[in-house]
Amino acid sequence: MFLKFFGLKEQPFGVTPDPKYLYLSSAHREALASTFYGIEAGRGFLALIAKQGMGKTTLLFHLLEQFRHTARTAFLFQTQCTSREFMRFLLAELGYETGDQDFVRMHEEFSRQLLREARAGKRFIILVDEAQNLDASVLETIRLLSDFETPRAKLLQIVLAGQPELADKLANRNLAQLRQRISLVSGLKPFSAEDTKGYIQHRLQIAGYRGGSLFTPKALSSLTYFAEGIPRNINNLCFNAMSLACALQQTTIDEGIVQEVIADLDLSQYLSQAGRHTPVIPRAAEPGSLEYSWGQSAGEGDGTNGSYWGSRTGADSRRGPIPIREREDDDLLTPAEAHAYLQKLAQSLRRWQS
Image (cartoon, rainbow, N blue to C red; front, side):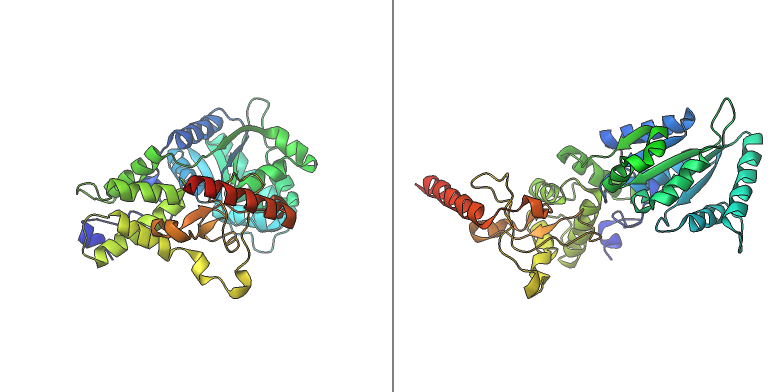
């Protein structure tokens, strides 16, 4: 570990959603304020939607901290479940054993707990993470929970947080009643270059770092480019860069270290023979664009927001891998279109060389 080498009290780029490390970019600040206000104003249903790796869970834990002393809260993340299992998870989160109770009895038990908290003057907040995995029937169960209200106020505040697939589900006409009840929708955007720098400095400071600039300007520029503004990508790159710097006994991380880390994270070098294909060329690509790659997308759940580190070739290989966005089949060219595109690209390269 590099903690002692860099004078750190704890790991600054861990994989757990620790709310004290939350960095509020303008988009994160706006989403937090909007969700907080929606709960304070008793708006009922709220939604937080962003791509994976953007820090939704960290923001939700921070939100829980804000209401820890003034509300009864439940945080649910086991979303691949039936309606009965959802109610069982909900009651277990609230500290109640359900045993073999059927759905109706669990619903009645939840009603009693909700009314008890309301008489005590406390809000009741349910946060559902990874809500894009919820089956339509479970979303309907959650909608029915929101029917608990008095003539003057909602007794229950529900925040559904998830990836863009959640928006797809909510837009389905079969869930129109649920969509109509969602009064506020917030989103998170990738960090800008300035946000990326601030994010790294913030996490290092919280972890106890008191030295000078850890990354050289060029190293920070390379890291910013390849991380694509995704906090999870930034964490992975920083962790590996600090580990390598420690092994090399370098107290400052230069561009060479960052480029070596990026090359190590290049998944294309590990693809099987079956996974190596001809170039994937986007329809909208312009002549001279580098946005094509050998290989295929690494797939969901790899921590890279649906993309992987593609490889550069030729003179650009010294600059390391290039991030390749995931392509759908509809974006691929036909053989004839690909041939025409490559001819046009060759003409552009000849003009550039002359």
